[in-house]
Image (cartoon, rainbow, N blue to C red):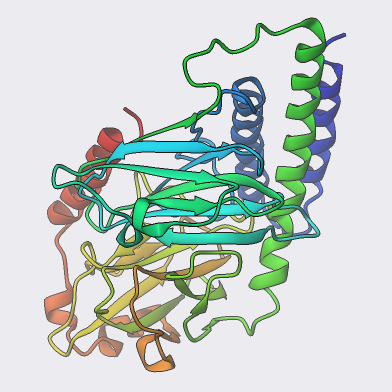
Length: 388
């Protein structure tokens, strides 16, 4: 049957999920099955929307189709490009704290991180007073003064990220066109095209599952548990993005206190991830904080409590029953290199010592009613910017 390559890939991917080495509980397995469902949906969608002649921006990750330790503060779009063609991206800048562009050569795989051809944020662009812009990518020589950037040999993906330091910031508008095909109809699909697209979806699904199961092993799990690194450039990431990473393992009677200076960076975000290398549920729970959402203490420090049980403080980040997981800080739109002094410090304490371990505990406390309002604000903001 036409769909056999996809159904075979789904069956193989299910086995990979069911036998993942990090599974310790029924919760881990159920989360894996949900992760698989999102991957199937995203890969089928991408395979049938993919076009080398008439590219469009697609999002491969979101609240219900997660991958790659997706950042709850970021909207991601990607389009396939060729290094011998020219593309124009037109849009209107939103009010978000960051808008960035990245050209990659190759794909993320379980053996390779793709090469970073170029990466820049909108400060490198000439943008009109009304927020509109036009940027071109092609094989010609770079001309940043006229918003032209070179697609070096091997360029295969254009990734656009819109980063929110405030979840009520206005979303931008972005469109991609291939210059030599704009105004012409896309070719009608043939039976051979349908065969190739089901095969493409199957390959993409297996690659997606295998790839992101490797990333925790490469970049997190070899670090000492319950520690975080000093800020460093994000592997395969943006030139202006730094990250501090780690992994935790906490008992129900323990909590981790992360202390980090309130940053001068336009964006500082923290999130928890599961060992499937995806974000935890950020829609109905506070599993992430950024520099707008987090409470800052009078001494200029942000103190985050990571725990399963509710300590009754504003900066509680919920583990949702996961005894193990990933810790990730990100700084973006930096114009200086952060030092270890800009980074976080981790401390594990008994849960019943959280109050004594917070120097401003009285001002950190939050009522159940105010907590419910924080969660409602998250739910409303995600519905407005991610689900519309």
